[in-house]
Length: 292
Image (cartoon, rainbow, N blue to C red; front, side, top):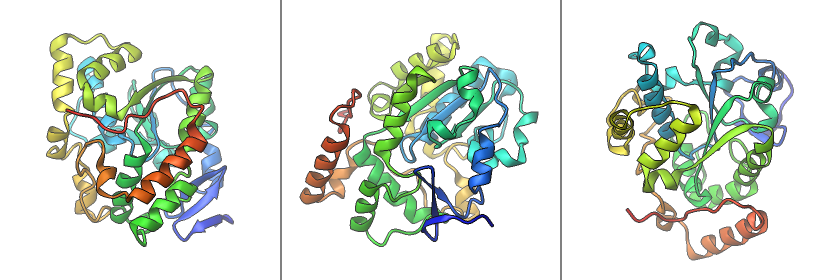
């Protein structure tokens, strides 16, 4: 095995990111992703972990199935939206018909060269980092590839220090925002989807060039509500529970503001100080709470 810069028994550091040891995609394999052959019609779903990836995955599948009904099938969302860093070395994608959709957490400098060269459309979904932290904490307790946190207090500090899977939230979103002159990115905020899902679906359709009827858009929205997804085995990763890859359900609440149930006053103040230090000049505004 390649020599790794271990952050923990579960993570190794590569190009400022913390990568899963047990995923068996080491530096040589990560470098090979840069040469992966993308197609002009490919769509990339990119996010920092626990920012709304599974939700956006459902939305994109519903849009694609409506626009390309010949591709609709019985496979799960996880199978249909392939994880770039999870399966690229096997090259199972060459048999998939266009348009393909990939999901990834990789930063801009680790994406395939063709994403920039072919002006591939990227949907980047992001979420306020306090709720990301809480969701990530619960996810780390469930996913067997991650170390179970010693405590919420310990995980809180690891998150602020960038010592969690994929590294710093602050670096991830800043890197993609800085790359928007080189990459074709549509930014979608998780909290905006909570407040006006239909409006965000309309914007995504316009970005992807999918001209759907009002009825079709309504169907996409209905199929993409948290209530429907939570009971949909194609969307809720039920198979990961059944095969013990997850030890508990990871679709918990689908809300904003859950940090209030976990952060102490001192932690909230500490987070605000770090956020101000790192993001005071950042032009995108976080939404910390959504009143529905």
